[in-house]
Length: 389
Image (cartoon, rainbow, N blue to C red; front, side, top):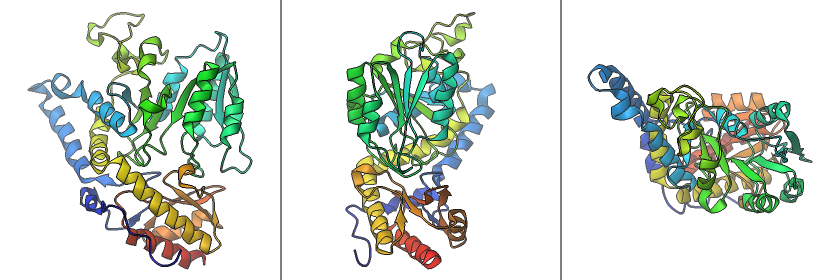
């Protein structure tokens, strides 16, 4: 590879006008925190106005009660799931814990299969289930960056209750091939939970066709939603069969009947709710979801593959250590470059107007998204070259 990045298939940088602060720096941080949609400010003001007018018009009845449904169905369209199968959650940890609370670890199957490349929350939630009888099996990684799919498949046996793993690793951007995992789990009579936090919004997932039992994620990263909400997708046929022990009054079939316990679960995805919905969070997340929908996942993924591929080639030509798979089908939207003293390198890049972050063992993390321009990506890599040689 020589010179500038290959030309884009379709121009999408027109959406830059819909984001705040995007011209003040080169934002390559969408794997961690997306930029603020301009509409988010007005959306939060709408929340305050609705609250302010509550004395005149009941905010719950007029707007707030069904807001979760709009957000859930927008997420469903982005991940390729049916409407009515996604419920916003306070965060992804709660989404995971809600699924964990549905499971019976004393009914024959006890094995939970996870991997060494999952986000720490996954390990914390599933390790906590040992006290309830779960047996946790962690599939190891030899290099700390990747795990062969065959190793995951071999870990699924007749005692497996659930396979819970990340679609794309936060550490290396390594992407598993989930279809074979789902197929193997079904053969063994096990369920599959896929953490799509690092893939939803930058990769076409096709949840309906994939057939995983659960998907969890959040809106702070590729979905431009800020640190406000997580979400849980449940496969439609699983919804009426599960009864979460982590629950609350919003999960009741008739919440405003205020019945004493035990709970009568709602028939819909709302049965996986807990207490009162975080309304301000939903207001802050909806503009980003609309924006991602408008741009479209096919265009976003195409541009991500092109730009991350160019970044990897740029790094390899200079002899840098790349801790992200080279093959497009095996990586997410982030590129990890191994550098000495990555915390210092990330700080120096920020001083030069390039927003990235770092993680121990893998170096700096850089993520182009739909709003970035080719010129920005090239300038960022040029600045990194000046800093590390």
